[in-house]
Image 1 (tube, rainbow, N blue to C red):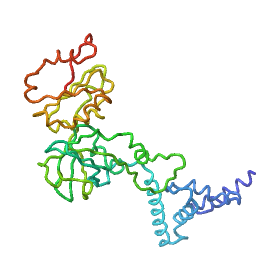
Image 2 (tube, rainbow, N blue to C red):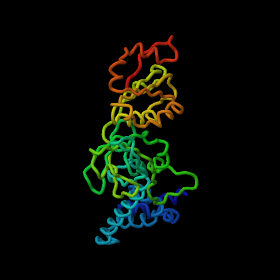
Image 3 (cartoon, one colour):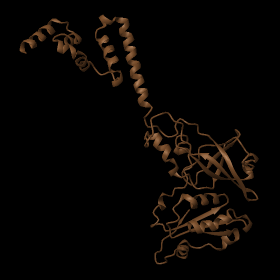
Length: 339
């Protein structure tokens, strides 16, 4: 055995000084393990295990340019670069993506319904796209108080007041899983179309917004919804329902739409002791959402007090006394939060 070792060393010393010759010369058993030992001796080129055999032959030609020729060596280098680039492209298909970054800011919408609330105030209900694959979070309706942008058949963008609750985040479960690269049971990594999430958006329109918007109907086509403007109302301070059990909402004009959005989903009103909406109108015939006020009381526990301009001036009450009159527990006084 020692003699065989000495023979191998002697032959290796007589062989060329290249790494390839040193590894391939010697005992036949060593020669049979040459490719494996050779792969350990060269630097990694980043090729996957599927192309290891071709990679080894190409690297062997690179290590011995005299045998393969200078032209063949350059072709092998180009082939290695191509294989490495293909590997990077395959890895990029399953990398987590940022939501809605490569999509247009304006998406198509469909008019579902329209009704007249007051002689010069209408409510238009739209079906809009809200998927995180197609609409980014900053452009979405995620907080009450943001303004919706609307276009009709290529017209100028118009800012409108939403009168519905912000879009439910629970509907984004599927799109967010897909963007993150997660797979459900039985799902394969194949190219798929974006997951669409349609939700309803209600906006208030007046004749001042233009006839093309004021006369919207389910037959109207070419309606587009763009990025929502503003950051919305900052309700972080009153998230603690125990520190702020009493909340007072003050609304006037189209502000009733924002109040409706807060009541129906923009604020945790069910868990508070008292939530009251003071709605100021010019006269009793100009009350919007009169039918919904009883629903707000039964479903959300929000009481609505309608004041005309004359009554509003005659019933100014100090906030501390107003708190005691609204709280169900007078022994626990706390100043109300006015929105």
